Structures are given as C-alpha cells and as structure tokens.
Image: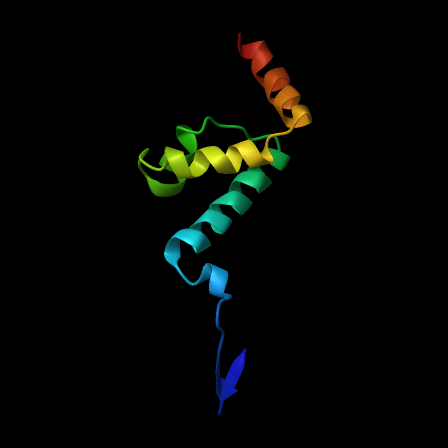
Length: 84
C-alpha cells in the first residue's frame, strides 16, 4: 500500500495484473468455498452462474479438476443419489 498525502493506493501482485489471472483466482475461490459447503455443479453450469454464459467452460474445467478429491467426489455422489 502506497500512501500519498491523505490518500493511499494498492498495487496488485504482478501475477494478478491482468484480468484473466485475477478472474481465475476469484473463480477458484468461489468454487472452492461452494464445494466445501456441499454445493456442486457441472463445469457447464459454473460459467453460466459466474459469467452469465457458458463459453468459459475451458476456464472452469481445470479449476474443478484441481479442487476435486476422492472425498469430494464421494460426497457429491451421496448428495445426488437420492435424486436418482
């Protein structure tokens, strides 16, 4: 944080200075928090929720792959089993 007079400004880390990098981290955190609370959606549904359209599936897919574990997969199966 840089302070000049009575105002101050913040500078993002170099890794987050372009929109795509910042958005990827933002999306990852939202998806991670949702999954921790048992909220699971398909990779096709996440971009619709986050962006309003489905063309960003290729961005969401690796995020979900990274976050999925054997335990989270089993939890998702248990949640959807009563619907079948």
